[in-house]
Image (cartoon, rainbow, N blue to C red):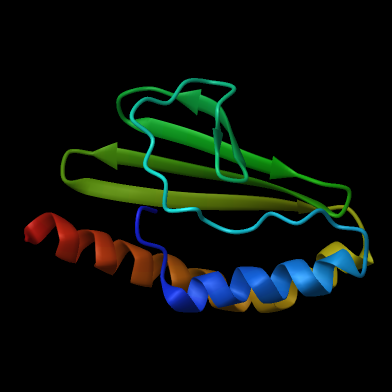
Length: 120
């Protein structure tokens, strides 16, 4: 996430503004700061690193409304990203409606951006 999309930055700002009205902590989005090394317990922006090896990175973010776990794994030249969400209350359910719709497109765009960067 060295070069977060401008639309994603805006989405995080809107998310933080709306969520703050419901007592949800601000996460600020992606900073663009690259990590040279990652170990369990580190934070990558708002995510906590739960597991890491040469092929897998598991990240979590938990609050009182929902818990998110994202697994990024590689198999040769292939990459997979899987996210799981556990919703705790009605705000979490409402929050997931727009996020659930947008998430697939956001991840697809991020992977396309990565593909272009790696092919340069």
